Image (cartoon, one colour):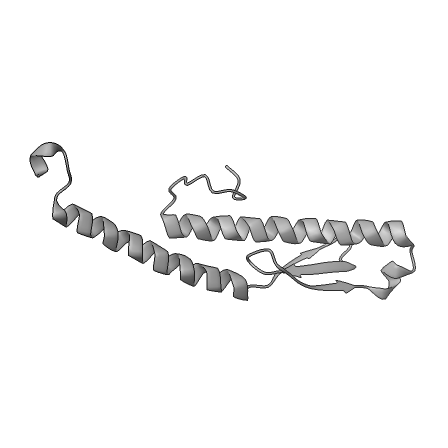
Length: 113
């Protein structure tokens, strides 16, 4: 069959083995990302938001003084903290995926690039 441009059985077996290993590693990575807590804070540190490595919201902490400064100030601080947490979580996820794929550019949705 090799004469018809098909890979030999050994190559197919190796490809399947690698695919299974990547699948197992991806599952492990998913679990690790779920367990992570990534904090993002407003510039003044009075608002903090934690996301998992998979960007699931985990908790919010606001300094009581922030609430006394009015709705606009509090909302801006929460938004800044959320953006910070999201950026850190996305960067962590992208880095871990690159480690998993050996730097292959898979152009995955939500992963930039």
